[in-house]
Length: 319
Image (cartoon, rainbow, N blue to C red; front, top):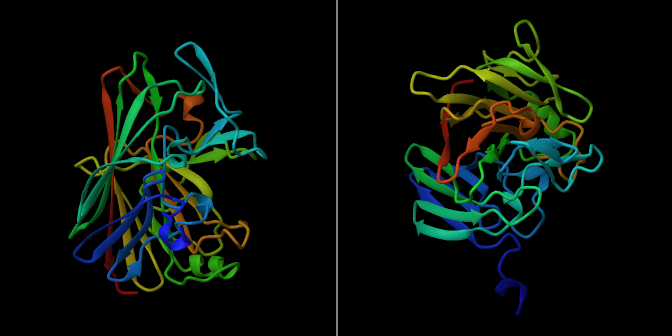
């Protein structure tokens, strides 16, 4: 079998489109591999045959970000997860991104994939998770649903990890210069403080600080790998982060009422080979170490289900 006859290493690639939007979803991890609008990349894509750098487009389940020492206690039982951020001794970003997902449905504008949690000691809860990607004239929606088929309550948190493209496609240090010209409007009143292991140690008001992004601050001179919480949700329960690029494209990332925080990472200090040409803006149902802190942790009862929906949309604005 020749290389051209072999499937991509990230599995089947599902193309969906409608109107000005086109997206590609990878079978491995049900990851959002690319998202284009009018021929422009809205997220930084990744090569389907290479390891995914810096979690591009991945679904972070059953927990986003970090679990301290890979250990947690839930409802009186102690669990140990494999460590995969060894330098900081953390478990990170869950397990859904590692596995091939099962195709449940495919049309020209939508694709639905499913994944059953594997039988592992550190997370023995029996969930089936579905990811529905759907493109309409208004943008791309992602709906992640987790159903508990087991006999135990299951701890759960969910996030999606897109790197919003800055439109410049540069590499190395030039990325920081291009990111500096971007703006992010984030309706959050509280910044999450962390230690040198990037684990939360408290919160603080954004008032009068560089963490106040409510008016659409530029990234110039800023280096973030931080979470924001206490979000201002609209009357319909949604919350929207707005990323504005130097080329005038404005990307809105809207989460439903289950989104309680956003993680933002500029990639500053990353190795040149893996530094993305953009900024990660990650809607989350809970921020780091929720399995230990319990903050915003979702508990799925046996027979119950939880859903989270996020929407991407784009427009052009005058600069």
